[in-house]
Length: 289
Image 1 (cartoon, helix red, strand yellow):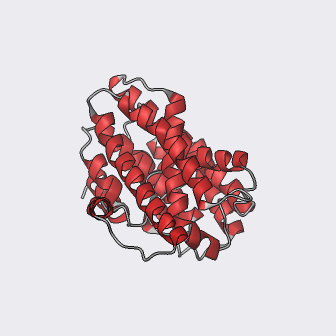
Image 2 (cartoon, rainbow, N blue to C red):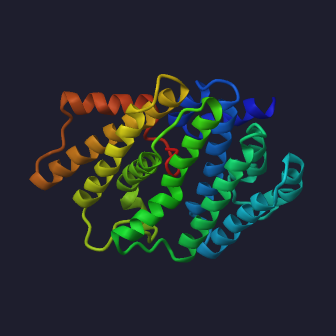
């Protein structure tokens, strides 16, 4: 099995949501976006790993970051990541093989993906060392930019590299932040069980809903400005799912507030059907949900 086919199999196992739009992309762009997704997924698996302490997470993330910063070509990547799989036997396959994913993209764009992954790994290491302490909205903005808004910028660079598609970079950041805010709302109860709270002090679910919708409005503007082509086809699926997820969460919140039994209206049932078909309830990493 060649590296691209193998990468797509790993992608299918880790995210049904993003497997569909990535697999539909044309050659070269497909390899570039798959490389970016799998590299980000590799470091996200470290950040969220339940069996690793924060010190170990930071160490592993910085190892990946420094290796990518030292790379000058595919050969040096091979050398730098030799033995990485032996650093911790608990690491997921997608993490162990991060060097392979970094080599997947075409050479003319691969260094941009290495740069983005290295920078994100550094930011994740910082947050791990500080136990993801979010006190203010500015802290939340820093976190959502570091792990998601920056991915929006990377995607914009990939579209421009492939066919010169131009985008609004501020809207690109909102695209990433909006998807990440929805993920935070989906997973906040599980996060709190492991001692992590992404809500600024005093914030409720309503506040995070407002934050998510404000950023999704930028994501809508980002997507609506895209011409017909691979970038538009890629962005529509996760954005549609993000809106659907947020609607479901808001409906559930209102049901709890009004203290009546949660029941599925036809509209909500259709939202859930769409989300399940696309795998929205499968495990997902930052932004690349």
